[in-house]
Length: 510
Image (cartoon, rainbow, N blue to C red; front, side, top):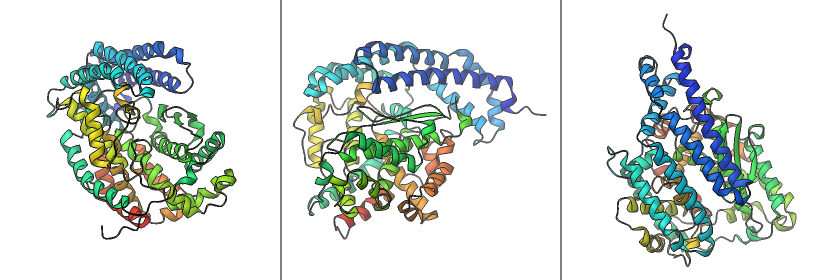
């Protein structure tokens, strides 16, 4: 009788080794979560060293020759199983991760991690004053290290390809640029058309809203939608994020500001979307390469689906607005739901990506992607980045930052990660969310009515069945094709924007 992979001693050894690696990665994630939430400022340097040590240990174990030999010995087992089987997928993805890790020397991993800590500290000091020159040397070093990282993958057609694939497996510079150019050609005229119409009034959102009460509403909302607090928690942090430590521990954070009501609500819904994905992955995948979302784009797609397609819908607020009114009677007691719905969907040309509306958001992400590709390819020097940044904002949004705090220094990504592969996932996620949601509505047209009644199970179960449970088993491209029957394209997202904002702004004929 043929021994099944999960009964084979070598397969069991593989699983044991992979779990130890994942344990080290999870320990580093705990330290990063603490750094962003409760750690005293004085611990930042030591914490960076601790995280670097754990990352190096994990990298050393991943590149251990014994692990590579083990994977070679399991090739026959992998080939004897269907592509979709859990066991074959674990071996396949472990081999992919090992192959990638072997290209990158552990000494480089340590150097990069140490530099990222230094760059982050410099950024936190320079951002409030908009002092780009203070961080420019760090950014130039990051670019140098990013190019070195890409050089470990010489088979790539373009230098950014390997960095993009690190976050969005299966995507290339050419593929992403093709999608983004098509989308940008649709977005710029739409933004201009909306700018010519009478603008929506969102002043009701800028009153004083007690921060503790805002948090209480966020707790209620994400719990009602389906976030499992038995396996998670909601905390505050300067920059909202989600971290998975295990199947039973998926944490989210949000940002709360007293005069920006929607910041906490939509940050919470966004991170909840990430967390629902992670909480929905098969429990049996814990400690394996399958136990996380398949790509930055697909992850962002789940977050954006719940934040925008659901959270900014009229149906959602027919359910939740009475709760919000009850918590803020003085501010919202006399404001009808339709006025609130219009306020939260106001389109405005602004400088900050994280607070941008659905229509303009992707212009922020696309220009960042274009700039990092230009830097990697040597067409843009770091010293010229602020000027290029400002000029692109003028072209796409008709506004120019007056200081670097709201310009080139606003995002943390290039100061804690590499340059390259950092921003394409946001817009890819919006495209994926639209295409997936359109498919869900074709099968379940009752979803909006369910949501209006406070029932999120139909959509949640559909996503669980089609996306969440698979974890990383399939690439994002494979999932989109399997679920929708078509490769990723921009049309569903453009249809969604034109219909929703055409109605809101009375734009016809598009």
